[in-house]
Amino acid sequence: MGPPRYCRQTNSVYSRLSLLSLNQNINLEQAAVSFTFRLLTRY
Image 1 (cartoon, rainbow, N blue to C red):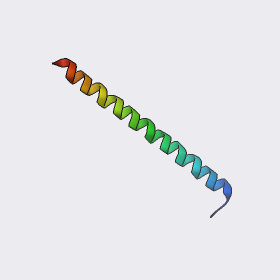
Image 2: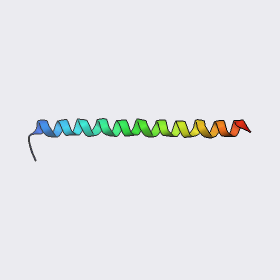
Image 3: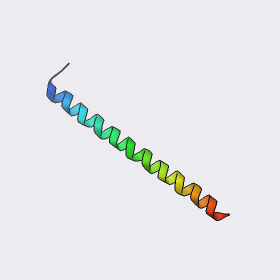
Image 4: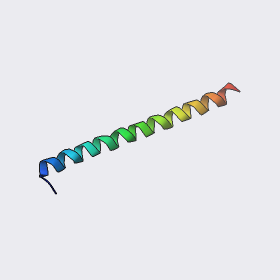
């Protein structure tokens, strides 16, 4: 299993990565919404 300190470090890294991916998904959704809104308001 390895020392507990190493497990704790990997857990924090995994949580940071999941938070980053979550923020990226939210940003992608906002960009898509704004893009479609611009397309709709253009016509």
